[in-house]
Length: 496
Ligand SMILES: [Zn+2]
Image (tube, rainbow, N blue to C red):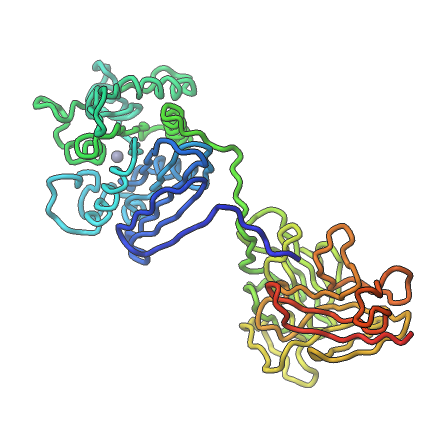
């Protein structure tokens, strides 16, 4: 196997508060603030390969408004061609856990004129920095009733919030100077797109100017909100997106997504669809049943003790990918996929998980030595490695043989050798390359890995003498490497 080539995607997790990395092209970063605390805050930055505007999306600032954080979640794994996103799906995680608007104080009323110090203060401090770092800001909410510019009913009137995009003014004088930004027009373009997906005009979105800074505003309390901070201090366009609370969740989330997509289009932030995310495949654990027992969870590099002749069934593999997963119980079963098959085990072996052709983790099956007490229940143990060095598990003409690292074996012309595995390894044996020099196991893709292939020493063209140590086909060797460094050898002498 070859090391998996990870693309430019990387995940960065730092505990330090108030650390802001500059967005880098074609990258994704994940920053965790207040790690391990109740108010843990996850900030995802996605940057396109081409520079552009930065849109900040904040969801879950009030925990009883789920459509915001559920919609924001959809953008965390996004890839962008142009521009940047900063996504904070859950600004107020404690309030989400309680499904309450607030815990100590309304977090969206703490962006100015607030002197009470609590976790909300610390989160708001981070959010303020993110807002000023951005070119546009969306605060995702659910509002009660339905906003209408004219009074229609108790639930649908100018005082209500639902089905509206709120700004604190019609125009904004941007921080960088220049012509005022027409917030009403910007929202109008987006509202047109949202309404295309809303059949019933009763629920159509409207622009809702709170005129927050004006003396006669109906919404003086909004002067302490995140959007007002964005407009007043950072001087960037900022909008509250309000889905009506009473609507079905799926519709509320859809409206949020249409709004975010609409703003991305207005700001020339262009997604890459589908995005490419080639993170290194990593198995977490396998779920294994022995003799139809209740399944046990066996983690990467853990060992499961069984008895000779037991039937083992791998029911599932959990990895950082969902598709392309398989398992191979080395030396038994199929050479392709042993997932869900009941396979009788006669000798200690290893189960290798793969994502496509990449080995991504192993667990071990240990046969109890005869005469030892048989455990009454399945025992999963951590890899307690024996003190001995690497060993090779070979199959010579169908007979198992264990040999120490750097030892010498003699084969007769015509013997069939299978290098089944390396044993006693402190790391996952799947991460080695075990290469019989002068033999090619996988002819379509020569990775150097030769475990599992029958090596017929008598057949024409199977062994290539020019790769033997004496160039005459008498002395071959098997080279074992880990990350391209030698960790072992076997010397093979051929009796011709
Ligand atoms: Zn709200």
